Structure formats: C-alpha cells, structure tokens
Length: 549
Image 1 (cartoon, rainbow, N blue to C red):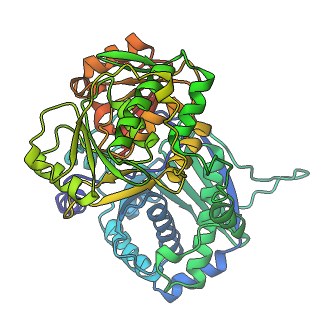
Image 2 (cartoon, rainbow, N blue to C red):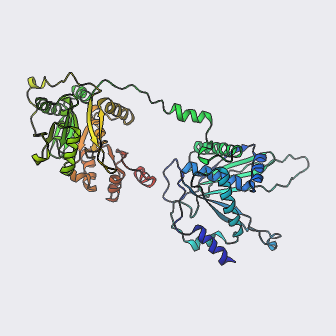
Image 3 (cartoon, helix red, strand yellow):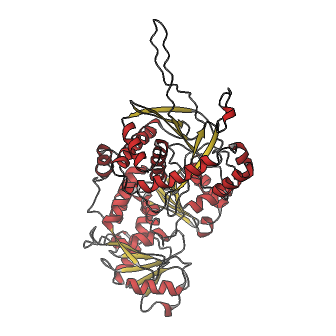
C-alpha cells in the first residue's frame, strides 16, 4: 500500500517544485525563523459556502481552499499553487479508540493557469483533494525523505503555506455557578510563512491568519484577510467569474490605489532647459567639483567654460534648436562638457558608445539626421555621409568676451535635449526624441526623491547610449553634487568599482542588477553610506536582500 501511495505522490510532486514567492515586507532571513502572530476575522458566510459547495458537488473545505488558492494566485502571480493541510490520520477503524496523535500532512497542488472561473478552480481542487485523501496514509516525513527536495534553509520544504479547517463541533461543558467561554490562543509562533485557519460554525466562519512576523507586517495580513473575505463572497455570488475578475479590495482601497496614488502632480521648472538648471548651479557653487574622471577633474566654473567654448564652435557649424549632433566620446573628462555644449548650442545630442559597430553608428547618424559628430577617436570619413566630424580636445574654455555669446535665446523646454536609440533587438533601432521638459521632469522628481546635495558624489557607470545615463550625469550637476565618471574598464571590473567608491567617497550609485551582482561576487561587502539604485533589468528578491544586508 505504501509503495502505491508513494508512487502517486512522486508523480504529483516529483521534479523541481515551485516556490510560492509571497510578497514579503521584510528581507528574508538566511535561515527560517518561527516568530509569529495571528490576525483574526469573522465572515457571515457559512450558509452560502455550504450552498455553493452542494451545487458543485464539493465540500465546504474544498470551497474554502479553492478561494485561498485563488487569492494566493492573485497575490503572487503564480499558477502552480501548493498548499499543505493536516488530516486526522484515523482512516483505519482500529485507530478510533486510541489516544494519541495520528495527524498527517497532505499537499494540495492545483493548477490555476488559463485564468479559469472560480467554478473551474473548485472543480480542479476537488479532483486534487479527492486524490490526495485517497493516498493520505503515507507519512509526510517519509514523503520528504523520498522526494529529497532541494533544501533552502530560509523556507520549509515542498510548501510554504497551510490551510486548516476546524469543523468538528466542540462539546458543551457546563459547570455549576461558572460561565465558560472559549478564548482564542495566540501562540506567538508560526510554523509556516502563512497559515489560514477557518473554524466553521452556525454563527459564521471564524478565520485566523497565522503569519511569520519576520516576513510580514500586521497591516499586510489585515489587508490579506480582507481580500480573502471579499474574494470568497464574490466567488459565491459569481462562481462563473474568472478569478482575475474576482474582487480583492474594497471601494476605499480601490479609490486609494487608482486615484490617490496617482495624484503625482508636482511643481517643477517646466519652462527650463537642462543646461539652464546646470548654469544656475554654476552661479551658486562655481568652485565646487563637478566632474571627476580618470584623466582630470573639473569644477562647475571650468565645466561651464569648456562647454560654452565648444557650444560656440558648434554654433559656427550651424547647430541650433533641434539640430542633431552625434557624440561618440570615451568616458573621459571631455564627455560631460560635450553633452552640455550641444544643449547650450540649442541642439540635441545623439549618444553613440565608442564600442558601437561603425555600421550601426552610421545608421544612427543618418536616421537622426545629424549634421555634426563630436568624437575623440579614429573615424572613417566614408562612414559619415556628409556629417561634419569635429574633434574634441581639452580646450581651456575660451575668453570671457566670447563666452558671453553662448546663450541661445531660441531654445525652449519644448525643444529636444537628446535622441536615444533602442537596442534594435526586435528589428531596426528606433530613435526616441526626449524633450528638455521631459528630462527636467525626471531630474526634478528624482532630486526630490533622492535628495542629492552639495558634497554628494554619484558614481556614473552606465554607457551614454542608455537612457538612464542622463540621470547619472545631470542629477548631480543640478544639485551641486559631483559626477564620478567611471572609465570603460572600471565599469566591468568589480575591484576597480569598489576602489572608486572608497577612494572618492561615493554615496550614490545607479546600476543594473548584473553590475551589483558582479560587485557582490567580487567580494564587495557594501558601503554604509552608499545609496544603491537598481534598474534596467528585473531585480530578484534574493539580490535585493543581499544589497539591503
């Protein structure tokens, strides 16, 4: 018998099992903890649950579990849901008169893919539950030993959540001259990440969510309990409704999420251009360090003068509002002045990484309609298609009289700041035109969110051919902070990045998950003063936990 039951469970749970990725509030401890608390709720749904169950040839237990799994599906976005549930373990008549614990644990694995109706979920769960109870005699401990699942010390094996239904009527106890009342017990512990306990009575359903307090805030579980009651009630009223459409929030919550959280209006200098914000900062902190690169350092005054001198050269080459200028420069002290120079001249730069194949670079210049190319390296004139190639050198910034002519009165926030090209992974690269107003909106909101200030230092590691580079280069320069420009070699070397953070006192850095992972794998232990921003790729919870620690 055990071999037959083991064969069933191996078929049901064999292979790599999905981990229920609950949206936790706190970083997951490296080892599982068991501190817990309980949130209780009441629902007047006993009769409705029984009626729905009868109509679908199911039991109230099945209906309640189906609603729980539908909720977990909505909460986690996963289709393959595993929930544990205890059984009395007294399937044989000879065990009935015995005193002792025969409790066993079953695993209910339900496929919720395809956005089924609740009635379909209940049907699937019914089949799963009947099969599980037909094979309930195999001890769970033996099943774990046979399956040998990949162990993760931070989670329980096979399943992470449990459902318990208490539907056995309690005997009435009466003592003379005493009034007796059942009191709920909060154990202060949680065996699993989340356990839903439902007690069925004529007065309604008494529910309790027992949860791990090292993972969840009490407010999260309170909302989850409310969502379960709403989903269950909606499923009872509309069993043919797809589970994606079942209600999981009150009107108050819906209004808060849809309306209140989208009230994002905020004042920002909508009529200013990016280079004008920089120039305003130059007036405030002219002698502060603006840029640190491997080959030099520039103060705000020096950066402004160098950008101004180059802007006049560009003006002489016909650059004005919305005129595109290719910028293909190494990550040297010349890069930031060149970008600002294009904007001071009224133009829009087209960033081209020097590692870009020249055929692609030629396409970008031609597609953008660039008139000028700023570069500091070798460039085949035959690749330029009539574009004027201007070599960038370390000019001293020109004289005061010439610099006074830099301001271009015709540039507004509606003109282009730059044109960025997509990777072309789905076809030909496409140029995206970014206006000054849009860029200023981003910079102002990030300034308000991150709070950079004079004395702060941001390590810029992203290639200028990626859009987020604009945040890295301009955000410090409108706040009196310093851009520490990582060289090409530094951006792919964990040790060099670590050294730069320590050497320059970097306290702000934006990078992709791949870069942060490279640094951690290179032995980086973090920097207490560093604010780490992550973007460009999906950030896994595990990497986020590592960075937070």
